[in-house]
Amino acid sequence: MIGQLIKKQFLLFMRNRHELLVLLGMPLLLITILGLALGNIMKSDAPGIHAKIALVERGNEQADLQKFVHDLENQDIPPEQKQMMADAAKQMLPVTALKNSISGSKELKPYITLVTAKPSELEKIRKDTSYTAIIEIPRQFTYSVLQSAFFGQTQQPALFFYTNEKKEISSKIVEEIVTLFQERYSTFSALGKSGLLNGSFRMPAVHVESKVETVTKREPINAITYYMVGMSVMFVLYIASNIGSYAFCEKQLHVFNRILLANVSKWSYMIGIFISSVLLAFFQLVFLYGITSLIYHIRWPHVTAFFAVTLALCFAVGGLSVLLTSLNYRLNSEHMSNFFATIVVTLFSLLGGSFFPSNQLSGWIHTLGNLTPNGSGMTAYLKILQGYDLPDVAGSILYLCLFGTAMAIAAVFIFPKKGELS
Image (cartoon, rainbow, N blue to C red; front, side, top):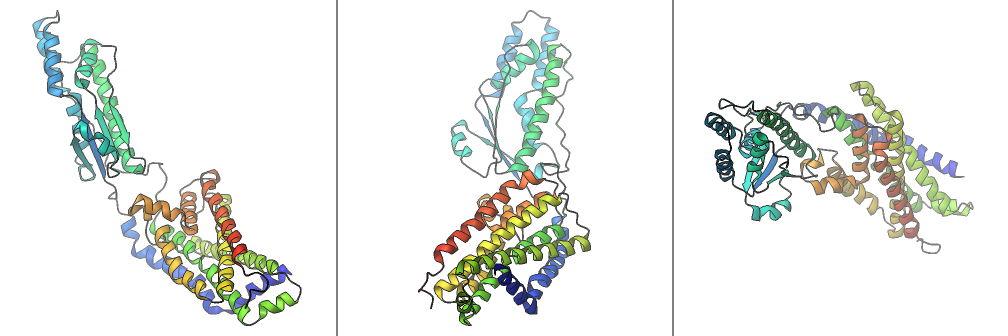
């Protein structure tokens, strides 16, 4: 009997050409329009990032230099060598070199802001999410560095580097700059220990290539690919609202009552709605992804991961379908399906990133968007298109399955009990 109920839902969709046009034709049209119109913006070489770095210096570099020069005067070495080492020390002050490394690059200057802060402001800055990274320089850091470079002091000087995990790309860039500076400086410290530095020495600037890549070294997503996923996960949600509307129409036309009179339980009816929703959503997604992949030559690197995410997203849509059906039956109105189609789907699409990447707004909006079924599915699809495999999207698959299960359980409790149907 469940098979007959599923067949019934398929026939209803096939006979409603207007719905088929909206569910299949409209997303294809929007993918083409948005992909071509916004392609140049998403392909722009200018990185949409900005790093704000706080430099907290607890000591005084000039005082450390004077202390080193004073110690140098007490060394039993020739005056000419003392002068040479003092001149070299002035040219390799580590804090000054670090500042030049961060803000001295012409290519990176538009994207990096260096803020010098007092030690008393450190805790306040650590709570400020606008900062990408914090560099804390302890007392006598410069003195320890110069002692290590010229006199071979065994105690290794260290600075503290904090990054904002929510700003992955910009914090990675800053980390690379600091690491490159550290490696370059360590090389010249070794030269100092060997006595190979002289007065003509100049601390070289750290050169950073202006090309910005993704942190994971994955291929970037172009506009057509992005909107292929965005529009598909958006329009698949309309399956749930349409199924809920069809179910309520069957209640009004007493089709549901005749099904009950045929000794078919209401739970068999709900299972039929759930399975038919899953299958319809699956066919819709496969059709949209198949057509767009052929037209625009988009390749899915891992087909197994693609089908796993697709089935999980369809499972979530099935849960939404039975929930909307239960709400319509409970309220004896089609308003919930209409509200879902007009308001909820639009809100989910904005939060989930169907129109533009939600992480460009703020971190919490991006997190909230991943809690929507379309947002979670979109994140997983984009990862697959970038080359990630099944284990990398397992979290999204699990969440979608749990979401669909939660919606189905809620539908069971909301559906009117025997005698409450009007």
